[in-house]
Length: 396
Image (cartoon, rainbow, N blue to C red):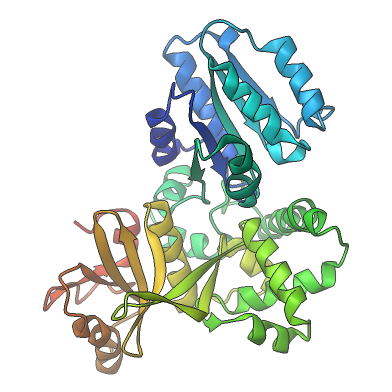
């Protein structure tokens, strides 16, 4: 059973037959980029586009592993892509091909190719590709399953139990929460190690696994906490330049996302002490070897952060006159503010979470997300919403 990634499929649809724009699909390994391509190809076939004009090359498959550089890729293109008719070309995990960007640029010059490429490194569109195609691309970032998608793939009458599974095992499509737990964690550890070796160590040209693992464990332990390179270096005993370089590579491989702090009053980014969030809580739990299900405040914050990214927001850690707003989330049409709290049942906690939002005097929407089922509604215009309802888009 597969879940249709409708948000992403709609984005691909909106760019179909724009041969002047390359569709770049990025995201961490195993988030479902290859499955997304196959789903989109099925959609094309269902709309009577001939298979003779659809080309899928997965550079990690046995069939295409011999294509290691742009010269070999150019030969394949010359031998297989017809020069007449509209063609749809899908190049999967293209970062495995040395000099791939030259071949993609050449494909675009042919003018009869609608081009889709995937990769597991965020540097692809911002550096290598941009150098050769002068900005004629759109990046579509793919994340692990949303809770809504997760529930569709793993249906259950006990939604609360499924949400606990989601917190514990993460949202990678290949991970079945009903499998044996030892098998699940073995799979997650294998995914982490593959990312470490193929997407990070290979780019760093080092075999220093211990330092990377140490830094990643620090970041996993501190999701949702403000931190900086100095703090990481001091705690791990690794030099600042090495920490900075390794953290950058882990973010480029989408293991982590960095959220900057933003001064809401001064409308400016603050240079230090942002927050790191993991792409997948399952990877975090297997690397930290713990999930008690009690202290879930920061994992909840992490889930909301990823969901806001999925919904197309630019997400920052808000700062309002020394009051912290968990997230300032912006789209072209406006900004929203979010606080995330496990429960608002105590008066002190309620006041602590609501007060910073009350201080902000603009008219942008303000929401507190909680696991509570009681006390929901509105307080002086501030919405109080159950987090599971919000994730399932049942919050009205």
